[in-house]
Length: 545
Image (cartoon, rainbow, N blue to C red; front, side, top):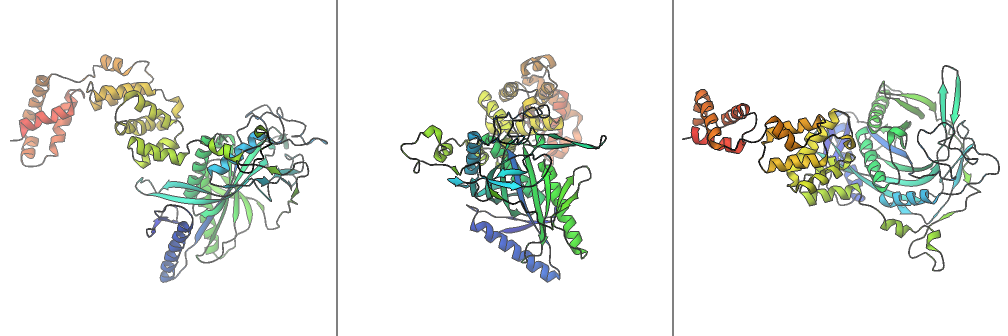
């Protein structure tokens, strides 16, 4: 394995390292120890030990299912309060849970995509705690034996603003467990009352527990974004954070290198990857400052105030809450099968076959990125942008298919021009007024030298204004077609040369950069309608001896 290179991201105050590795097991741990020992030695030489930060995540992903985990109630976002609540969801006496097959299959598929071991036998437990939006007084979860364990998630993230330094890291997945969501408390400060909406109560969740393998906010945000893409590719969760379908709890602590982990705090219910990064980085800074001042860190739960950019205390956890876990008496063990363990006399439709789910796994984001690079010859950073932006990959591949132009000539139009415009307008790809067919037509006209590159930019801007015209119609209307009469271009070049003798002299004395100025003047005169290659050729004939 190549020696790790220790970098420091001064903006976030966390140590990072670049390692080329084929897998994420022992190599990752070795790289960490190397980076840690290097930073410790440097600190000892300087006379003081630095702080190391540790971040672990607990992520709750709402399962993409038409009904709830243990009842047939409909799952519907923004439904009227208490309109999708069954007797079981309201915890009326005598009601019993019936497990949702779709939710189990979604958890298995997610576990496989995260390289987990799928437990053929898993158990359900009751987690007891009192809260108004938990009518049963307990949550059904999987504490003792979850459905999937021991996975790994590989992700990449960018250092600073440069795509040239991409860090590849891995985070271990401790477990994936099924559990039911709670209801929602709506606090009315004016009437001094709390209202309960049980629509969310009983919705199926996958809790994905990530080990404390991350060191700063940007790492955690990158891991969550990669997980979000995987869930969306699998269609096991819509993972829309703005609708609460993906919620993150971050556990953060700091310690000196070589010492045990410090007292951790938990920042609850973060619903944005950007806010997650900010919350973690603030909490690391807050804890470091307290310890530097001789204080102690409280084991507490905190919330992130995105308006102020700080975390605020919610409740302390010094007195550890006893959840009184116990086996769920109304649910038998969840038994799964694979091709080897499936009994020959059992109906395959009545069991969940792990191997069949494995065969249905779609192309995952990491595989898609590799395919885009290999198939289209684009840069790796471009493949990340295509995959990470919802709908952009499909848009790009449609333009490539329609235009049949070299994909490397198309990628700039899609990422720089189209995506740049959409970000400026805060619009998703699906709301782009420039259709893939229009962009493909424009690129074809440029490739056929019907228009110049500068004129093509003008046409694109016209398309962005929502013009219900084809690129060809815009070219004719604005008179943007290339001047194909060489004699006309020669006359314009001659006038430019005659009126800029100082620049001509500079070129003749070896300053060839000045040639670009003359080309620009010709393009300005022709309003971008002259072929830059032809203009340069004519100017060279007239200026250079």
